[in-house]
Length: 159
Image (tube, rainbow, N blue to C red):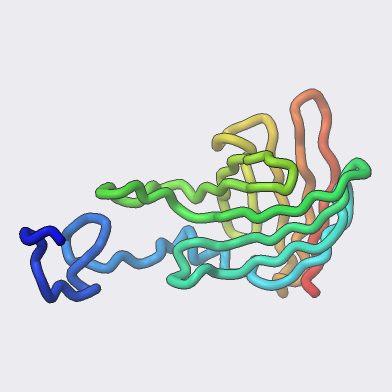
C-alpha cells in the first residue's frame, strides 16, 4: 500500500480535474433527451433502435438492431462529450459506434431547434444524416447523404 496516499478522501473531493468540483452534463448533451426511448426505423436501414442514458446523464447509449443491404447490423453507440483525464470536456457532442462485425464509426451530433444532424467522422463531412423532429417528438424524418449522390431516406417512429 502506498503510504503517501491521503486517507479519508470523499467522492465529492475527487474528480478528473482534481479540483473537488463535480461536473454537470452540458446543455448540448442534455438536449438529446428527446431521443430517449425505443424507435422503429424505416428506409434504407430497417429495424429497432433504443436510446437510454448512462448513469450520470453524461453519455447517451444507442442500441441498434437493423437490417441494411441484406445484412444484420447489431451494435452500440456511446454519445457525449470527450473528457480526457485531467482536461475539460470538449465542446462537440461526439460518438463512437461499435458493431458486431468489428467496425467502429465516429460521428458528431448537432441539434439545432428541431433539426438533428449527425456528421460521419467530423463536423462538415460530406457524409451525414439530417432529420427533423415532429412537434410531439414521436417522429424523426430525414435522410442519410453520402458523397456522389448516395444516401437513403430514414424515418424513426417512437414505439
